Length: 112
Image (tube, rainbow, N blue to C red; front, side, top):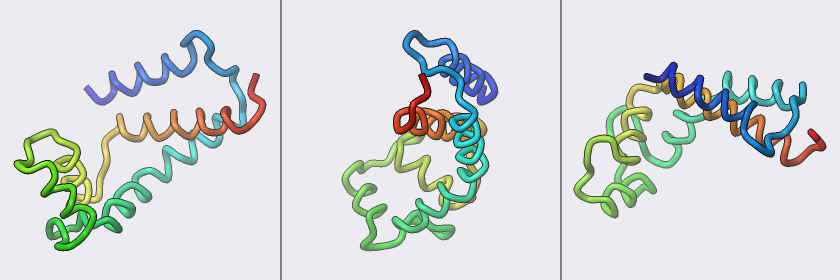
C-alpha cells in the first residue's frame, strides 16, 4: 500500500497540470528531505510530547489528545504517538516529505 501511495505522489509531482519543470535543485532538495524525514519527524514529534513511553503530561501532545478525546485508531494523534513511540515512519511519509521538499524549492526558486 505504501509503495502504491509513493508512486502516485511521484506521478502527481511530474504529471500534474501546471507542475513545475524538473529542476536538479528541486530533486536534490526532495532527496534531502526524504533522507532527513526519518530523523526529523520523530524528533519533532518527541519535542512536542509524543515520547517513547507515551504522551508527556502538560505538553502540546497532551493538549491534542484531550482535544480529540476519545482518540480513535488512525487519527492524527494516534499516528503521531505511534511514530513518537517507535521512531519510524513509512515509505509514504518519506515520499510526501520528498514532494514537499521539491515543491518548496520550486516555490522559492525559478523552476519554470
